[in-house]
Length: 302
Image (cartoon, rainbow, N blue to C red; front, side, top):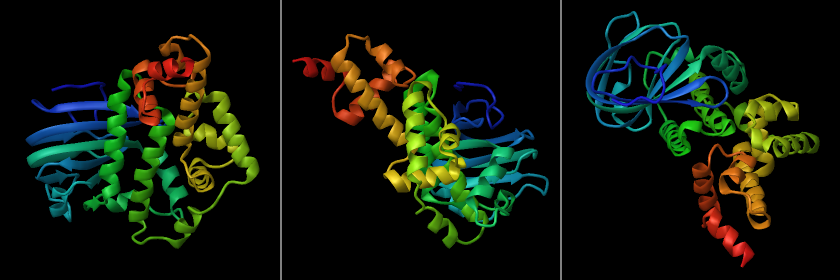
């Protein structure tokens, strides 16, 4: 068994591989659990927990006060991206048969209530409607896996808050839509909204001025004068990029200039443009430019 941090969404199992990371700026954790044929008691937690199957063929049984049963649609839990939601303040006995590799989000209930109100047309949907059955969407596996990979690459310092907030928003938006039972044309129309020139300017100026401080999605949205979830949709509609993507591109632009014009150590360049460490900086820089920071510097000065 391995574990990065305490506060796992699950009671730690003997022989299990368990790792936990903090994600975003709102107290969300993401836990990787890999095990076979286990039974465990999940204590009553003040968060919603959402378990997303990544691999394996398992049959989950759960008791949240109404007897040990298989959630409706659990045959779908054999497929990547299937998820089971457990409500807050509810203990759960789990019995899982077969191989099990999953990612578990722990969402503070106050944050969930605020997000669901933002994401649904009526603001009245409750994720509690989803706790009795399996929910499935490819986005669950894709987004959670991407976040986990970024967490592992970033190491102990963790990923940027805007990146984490964006992934969390995507997961909860899809859950909120599922809770509404039917797609909403209002949500689709809202995704096409664009920022006013003034709001876009304020957001970009704020990101430029705080890039080294790793601004959160909520902080950027506040600078633009909008709620973070309206801002997230509108910023992408306006720029073709998420705020996180914009920040990453801007960081690479700043770093390129510093590498060409100064002898600043690479570790300091990384910190000055908002990366947590040199390793993560080098990975992102190479992904963006096709070359390492050191190679870029050498070519710029040749």
